[in-house]
Amino acid sequence: MDKNGILVKEAMKARPITVTTKTTVKQAAALMKKKRIGNCIVSDGKPIGIITESDILKKVVAEDKKASQVLVEDIMTTPLIVVDPYVDIEEAMKIMSRCNIRRLPVIEKGKLIGIITQRDILRLSPMLLEI
Image 1: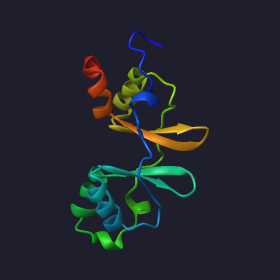
Image 2: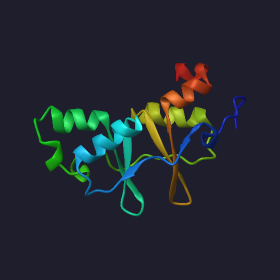
Image 3: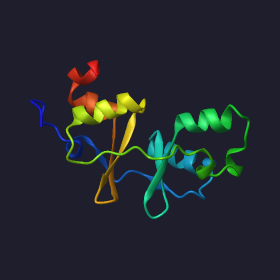
Image 4: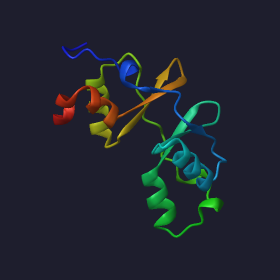
């Protein structure tokens, strides 16, 4: 633990929204709109991927595909890069930076318990912006 001392579990959002691999992109996008979020974790019993607004734009809209005919499993980002809830948020930010991602699902004992985003971290610790 560093001088900052904020753990991922203190900054994460609990109960992230999940969809299955057989969910259509249209259904996932409607759920994201309704919940006012930018991603869904893809799970088939265990978390296996993530679908983001960016995935939908690049892999469906830009390719002129019909969202109601494309399954989440066809455009999800996998493998899922995750973080432990007892890691310092500074370490989480380093993982995001290294992997060029903005969201990290939080996994404890193999179970999805939350998600932490760059925005969550910056709200708590603006000095981590340098990372």
